[in-house]
Structures are given as structure tokens and as C-alpha cells.
Length: 387
Ligand SMILES: Cc1ncc(COP(=O)(O)O)c(C=O)c1O
Image (tube, rainbow, N blue to C red; front, side, top):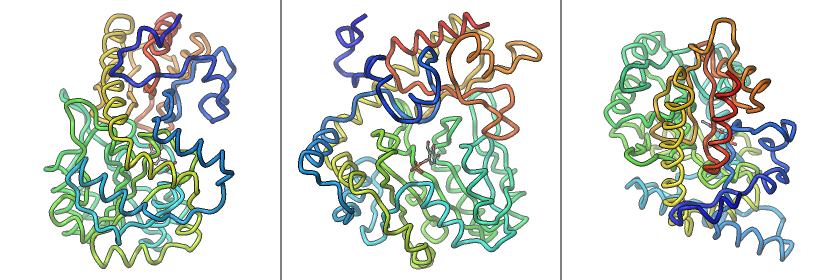
């Protein structure tokens, strides 16, 4: 089938399966070739042309040395202003190799061994590792779900903040449920953080991925947040650059800048050169492509909704407001069935197992829909047959 020929020109093209199989990255190497992987947050689309061009040019010139990081801060400030009306002082941006390292260094600088760090479960699995990595303890404040979807439990957060944790590690927008927290919710987070002396580390890697009908609110645009917040961002999720190692940490007050000054030297010096080049191209020249990506992902979200309703009615979900991740409630597929195993063993579709996101994820799977319409349809067909 020639998927490209039928593609909507407003959408970004997905690579065909035979090209995807040639990729050497984690998503396409972890499972045997007969398995369709809708797992780790990599996208199946061709790179944004400005990013592909700059990388090709670098390879042609054997320009693969060390990064200078020049221009990165200004590029992020320009992008944040145009996309979100967020005014960033370029001097308050620090390049780090990836968001994980930026977050871990912030947690290390803000805690002493044995301190508590609050997270909202279910949540991105490495959060459960990053906290013990700095000698701190995980405190869970579970998200709540109602008819309108998943939300922060602000009353629950107030209760755990009253126990005086050192840090609140916020996922904004939230992986895996796709919630783009509202300005009002984030304002309440700031009020609570200020009242109880908690620092907020806001992981905003999915910020550029607010889908049709939703808006991303950068934490540092919330009044009062500057005094209590460190944010970490990257172009890596929206432009599929995770392997190139470039992310940024942003502050907006002397107190929070002083925390970043305490980061280990390696965290501030080992950003990847190709990552910087690709990020500059993405932030300066990639917005037209990003708009088309968001149209594509919004269409894929609709397609997923229709396919689930038609073929897998026992699976419940709340369509994500942001990210290309769908958090699927499979608890009705049958007593004693482990959904991830059933879909993999019988359907040859790999998904992320819900329990990896915390105990609240039992009976759920996370599905990555950043792929072509044909592969998504094939995956849902296989999942339906697996039941
Ligand atoms: C919420 C969140 N934070 C961090 C990361 C990892 O980012 P990085 O590769 O920049 O460490 C991911 C990857 O999917 C993520 O979803």
C-alpha cells in the first residue's frame, strides 16, 4: 500500500514500515520484526526538513565535534515568546544534555538524603528512579479522574505539601495521561508551594505538543511561580531528537538561578553538538512543520478514538490534551488477563505496561500514536483480534 500517496498534505509524512525497521533506535530494535511497537516516546515521522538539512550538512562537513551551545538560549526565548507568550531572559537558560539530567541535577541541588519529593501518579516511569538516584523518597499524590478526564488532586496535594516535602516534581503536560494543566490549577500549585516552602521542578518536555483545542501553560508564566520554580524543556519530543542530547533548564529568579549554579559541571558541559544544531534549526525554522505535526497528531487522536469505539469498546480512555500518548484503561478485558501481555503475545503489538507508571497503572497500557494512519489501524486491528 502506498500510504504516502493517500496522505493529507496538511499532515507530516510517517516513514513506511520497511524504513522504520531500518532504524537503530530503541523503539524499533527492542522487539522482533513481527511486533508493531507503539512504545517508547519516539515518533515514526520523517524529521522536520530544516532539522534534516542542518544535520545532513553537519555530516557532509564532518562537523561532529563538541558543542558550543551558542545561540541556544536566544532561540528558546524566541520560540517561547512566539508559541506561548512566555518571556524568558536568555541569561537564565542553561543547556544540559537531556531533560532527565536537568531534572536529576535540580533534585540533587534541592534535597538532602532522606527528603521527600512529590509526584502525581500514574507518571513517566523514570521519575521513580530519579528520586532515589539523589537519595530522596517518593511521595505519591495520585491524579484523579472524573467524567472530564484526569486532573491534579489539589486537595490531596495540599495534604502532602503540609508534610513539608522538599520538592514537587510536576509533569506539565502530564505523561501518560496527556493532561495540559490549566492556569488556575497551576496558580493553586504556586500558592501551595509558596505556603509550604516546596520548590517545583516542572518537566515541560511535552510542552510543544498541545493538541487541537488545548493550550500548554508554561509554569513560569504563572504569577508568583518564578520564586519557586525550575523548568526543564527540550525540542526532543516534538522533533524526535532524543538521541542527540540537548535540553534546557530555565529559571526566573535569583533564588532558583542559584540552585542551577550548584549543578554538577558535567551536567552543564556535555550537551551534544548535533543536538544543539538540530535544536537551533527546530526552534528557529521548525514551527511550520510543528503546526503540521500537531494537525497530524490531532487527526491520529481522532482516528484512535473511532477505532477504539468500533473495535475495542471495553477499553476506556480520556483523549489526551497534549502528547502523543494514550492512557488506555483495559480493566474490563477480563479477569486475570494482563493487557500488555495479551496484546504482545496474541496481537504482536507492543505497548508500555501500565504498572511501570506506578501501582495506579495496573490494568492500563500506554499507547504511542505518533505513527502513520495505516500502522495505527493495523495495531488496533491486531489488538482487537488478540481479545
Ligand atoms: C515527562 C518526560 N520527561 C523526560 C523524558 C526524557 O527526556 P530526555 O530524553 O530529554 O531525558 C521523557 C521522555 O519521554 C518524558 O516523557
